[in-house]
Image (cartoon, rainbow, N blue to C red; front, side):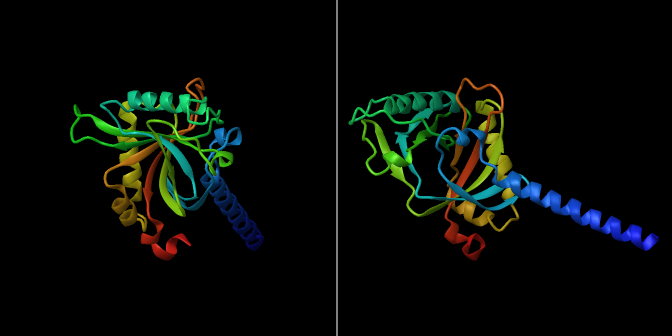
Length: 225
């Protein structure tokens, strides 16, 4: 009797552990809900742990603003967003309307002090159908991620405030310390990081944001294969 109960308990523990593992995998690869409605760059999750996941992006193309100098992440992102929104509405050399995509990226190069302007570059992902010949536009540039580009990613919710970005970047950095990814991420960062926002300003719940730290996967070798 006791042996039978022990066997059942053992099987139950195995099932619970297996279910937990499946849920963890599902959580790691879950894409933001916005990407079920509009086009986002494809990626593969190559690793995940408490507080971060490592993604491999391939051949993504972005249209980007020039550097925007500002003390406010929110203000700089708004400025860049408006430039890019006019671009996809037809203010480009082809007078072509382009579909909205996600996420909106803001690359942040922090200043040396709290009252100094930081540098921000805002980008929209270029839809696949436009990537063969993306319309040029004054003041904007097209950037292609040729081959694989890797990102360490931390996800968080809500509307992004100026105080959030540095804190979330620090949390991502802390979660990577002691992992096999830390050295490659630190080498690739040069103190900058990227904020990815997936939602319209008019969506008030279920908002998804991410901090990205881009790096060269070749620096990690076989761990990314």
